Length: 331
Ligand code: UFG
Image 1 (cartoon, rainbow, N blue to C red):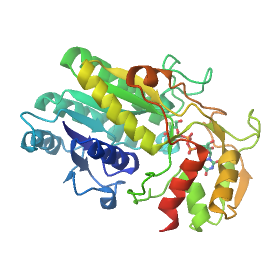
Image 2: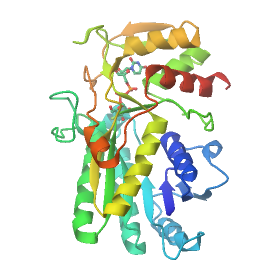
Image 3: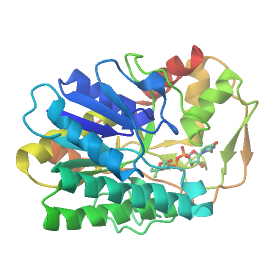
């Protein structure tokens, strides 16, 4: 199968591309390199330096599918991971998030319709749920996003629902919980620039790039007072994409599923385990709460297992930390 991976040079996109190449797919990566890195490209996958806001370049990229080996038509599917993803920033710059995440995705969908690409795997997020009404969160949980980023994701999910009915597009919306870790085989080395997430911040602090990090609040209603999250290893996310792709193409059916580990770890647990594994103190101070942080988010992954046979294999704390540190320690 021929797959176009939009945003394939990014942190998650590069792991997804690696997984699909390993599974024998022909891959073409389309990325504007605004946050993706050349270092994350693989020689087995062609690369198009293009922007999702440039409609003609999207259309011509999608038409390239016909030139790939084993192809008698266009791309069999596209995976869309090109988005802005900082929840906090989305509350300050909603225009940027409307433009990149909503308008950009509409361009992709319309180009897919124009060129006959019928299968789409979309990077959605647990941010669509907002403040949890219960945990673990399953896909039936109400979707009331607390930040504009989450709103952009649920809007696209809804548009995809209509394109399924009206334009015969089949989609997989993958609601990621907290992506973390690096390739277990060490093949992906590009580090995220200006990260805002816990794992890269711990790693940057351990490397000395940051003098100290902040723990955002220790007065939550959790056993140690710090927030609990469901960290899903990026290799597990990548296999989820490959399995979702197989599912929608074989069953001609759209799906929306959570991708999480089902386990929750607190900020303090992650920090303590990191200090032990890295064998270095990680200077951290307790600061005030960060606005919009729910106390606890964990996923129910029963649906992904039922439909795709997928479950997390690398999302234990030790593997999350060790693979992250492997990527950071050499830089
Ligand atoms: N945290 C700190 N200090 C930091 C950074 C984070 O204490 O310097 C804490 C946060 O307060 C939170 C936890 O670590 O309790 C995880 O925070 P992240 O910023 O890593 O992740 P979030 O849970 O805020 O959000 C992530 C993604 C979202 C996605 C969500 C889904 O960034 O896009 O997971 O669960 F929607």
